[in-house]
Image (cartoon, rainbow, N blue to C red; front, side, top):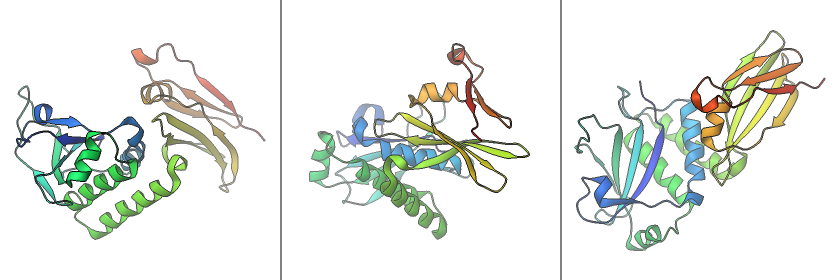
Length: 238
């Protein structure tokens, strides 16, 4: 079962849009991706599916002047690469000539890309009005909080305590972990910001959480990429 993992943005270079590798180009500057990355982390926590069978986990959004501004079109028939089934859903989105020029020179903002992504998700992948409203509400929360927007990543509970590792995304796309520990009454006993990390380092370093009365231990994943990483020990202050 596949859930939404990635949203990618493209700008169409020619009239033939059936081969996104040849006829389209990535159009998002790194500095504009943070709001959409925050959306993806939030949707992974839910999680969000692009189809009932869970066959697709990428959403490709292609901006084109062939459609009227704001109009979107789901392209169902796409080439199959290397004899494998496609892993992505593909949406054409109409933009104005002015927006197209902005895309060409990397001038569109992170807010603009986020709104385009949410618009495509609500128009083509949400059947219920409540789901559409929830996505729009999530969009506005992301825009309001910016780097302060966080989603829960992993939790560990004991008889007395609950530890939760939260994840935020910095504007430079580094991962901003925060560890919060609460007691049975929900009162905070620890709130600690962890060092910022590239996404691939974070995924390997933050594997398993262990919790005792006095300490939180975070073990790295058991793979070749994490073999040099050390366990993280955080004492719980009384």
